Every structure is written in C-alpha cells, then in structure tokens.
Amino acid sequence: MLKDSINTIETIDKLTVICFSPTHTSRTIAEAVAAGMTAAHIRTVDLTLDRSDEPIILNSGETVVLGAPVYAGRVAPEAVRRLQRIKAAAGAVIPTVVTATYGNRDYEDALVELYDLAVSLGLSPFAAGAFIGEHSYSTQEMPVAEGRPDTLDLADARIFGGECARKLNSSGAFAPFHIKGNRPYKEVKHSGNQTVPEATDGCSLCGECVRVCPTGAVSVDLNARKVLTDPSLCIRCCACVKACPAGLRTYATPFAAFLHEHCSARRDPETFL
Image (cartoon, rainbow, N blue to C red; front, side, top):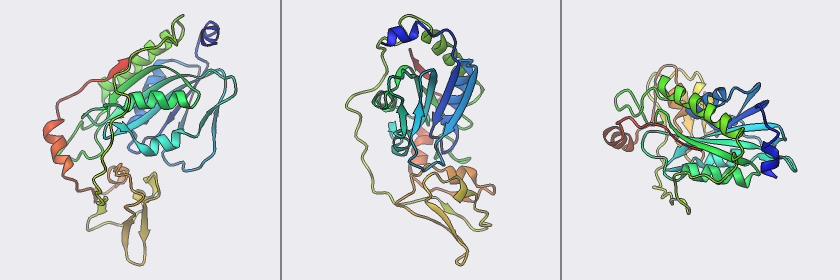
C-alpha cells in the first residue's frame, strides 16, 4: 500500500507541522525542516497552549513534521499526551518526519520513542532528526547551548528538509531505516524534586508567566500580590522563566551547574533517512 501511494507523489502539496514547544525551540526546528521541504501549503498546529482533547484528524495528501522536546533522554511526557490527539483518517497514508530537540546533553532514546509514537498514531515516518536547542535550565550565568537553534542549526534543518522531500519522491521512501536509540527506552528516575520556578523581588504581576505556561501551573494571587506555581502541574519547562519581560523569574536547580560544566561543547544535529 505504501509503495503504491508514493508512486503518485510528485510534489508536497499540504504540509502540517505539529509540535509541543514551551520555549519555542522544537517549533523553530520543525518549521525550518518544513521550509526545506518547499511544500505548496504549510500550516503549524502548536499544541503548547492547547489543552483540549479535540482530535487532530489528518487526511490523505498531507505530509507531517512532528516536533517535540527531549526531557531526560525521552520525549517530554506532556508532548506525548498532546500528540496522542493525532488521528489518521481511515485508509490515509501520512508521510511523517519526526524531530526531537534537546539541550546539548543527549537525546538518548527520545527519537526512537517519537518514531514509535508516530507509528502508533497511524502515521508513516520516513525520516528523523535530533537537533539542539538552548537548554531550559540555561541562564546568562551558566549558559547551555545558548541561542540555539542558531543560524547554522536552521540551515542544517532546511537542508535536512530538502533531503526528506527527495526521499519522499524516491521508490524506497518508506523502507526501514536506522535511528539511534534503544528499545526498551531508558527508565526515567524521578527525583521527587518539588522545586519550581519562582518570581524574585520586583515582580510586577504582569501575568506573562501565566500566559505561556503550557499546563496552567502558574497563577497570580492579586490579594497576596504574588505569583503561585503548582508543583503538581509544573513540568519544569521554564517557559515562564524565558518569557519574563523583566528577567525576574528564576529556577534554582543544581543540575544547571552540571550541564554548564559538562555539556557546553557544541553538538551538531544528527539526522536519519
């Protein structure tokens, strides 16, 4: 069925980017890959602030680029939950590129996990890429992949997109291909850490941190004149920290120092076709 389908593909008509991207790096990479595929029509479905359960129905004729961040060597659990809304229409073949973005430490089993998730959703992944974005815990004092994805990363993503488009038009587009990673996936050990991002003195209660929180963990208590963060909902993505216009929101974690010391050497994207 797949071989019959690719024989009719000459150009990419409709391309859909579907992503979960609290600090925008996964979306940036996925959209750069899509740009390199030079589709006639490109749309982005960003699930970061979309907490609905409404199914995302994909139909024949659509090609998809999935984008998700890596947390501790796995796909961010909240990204998995959001992407599970995707449904392929009955009989539809949905060519898919999977992209994982990690903070310069390691993506370990995340790319394989994202590939498997795509298959479980009825999609047909034929290419995969792991790219680097500034780590969520990166600060001016302890930078980790600061400013990434940068110009070189975006150029690499667009080149990869072009390679994906050429593969999609080849006779072996859906042949099995190697992706670095392991099955079963690594087990993530939860430390029980309940620390969350906090506002420092001078916070104006502008509410930007509330607006960008993907899980609704942040709220403003006007009576107490303070910002509250629910540890049970916070996923430590640090979107609120990155978005604070006054730079008055911080996240204190000793892991930031470890990352700065051991994961500062530049890593390059890895792609699989």
